[in-house]
Amino acid sequence: MRKQLLLVGVLMAVALSAFAKIQSDRVFEERFRIAVIEPSNGEFVDQIAVKLPVSAKIPKVEVFADVKDMGRSKSDWKKCNIETKVCAVGDVRIVRFHRVEHRETDEPWQELSVDMMNENPTQTRAVKLYVTYQPQSGAYLEACLDDPECGWHKRLPASQ
Image (cartoon, rainbow, N blue to C red; front, side, top):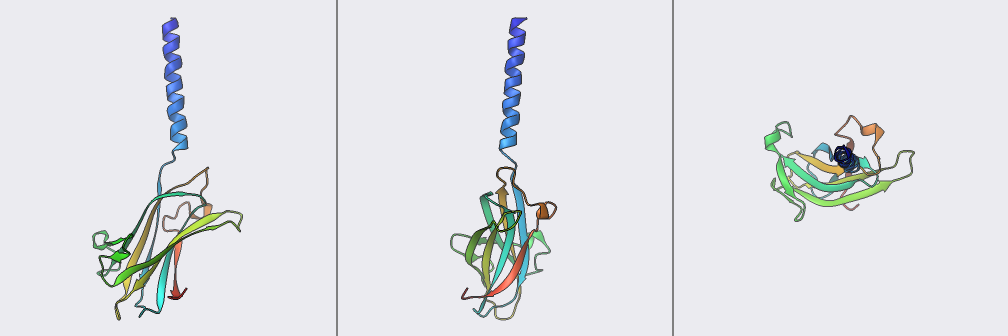
């Protein structure tokens, strides 16, 4: 009887430990933003951004470009190399990344954005910013709960 109680106690401790581990290692979530960018002639960059919970861990950031159907077909997306800032779609390139925390609101958040340039003189291109993240300390963005494409796209002068 004593061995059985000890075994039950050990099994409960293992189960509670596993449950606590699951709660502390929250599942990774994904957020993306797609934008169609016009030719820039070197004068403009297109900033594509996603909103994330403040202090989120970001293990993976991917950027893709498309020329055929502006992103409607998943198989047409071509990868951009974040290290070299070169995209497989040769006339699209990464200019820079930004990661900024915004704590001025009731619900603090952060942005992760990429500035892209379309160097084709006449054709538009589609760009997708895809971010895998892990919220920390129970943080989430109520405004983005049901919207994996929570973010924005804006055109800026290239000198900014």
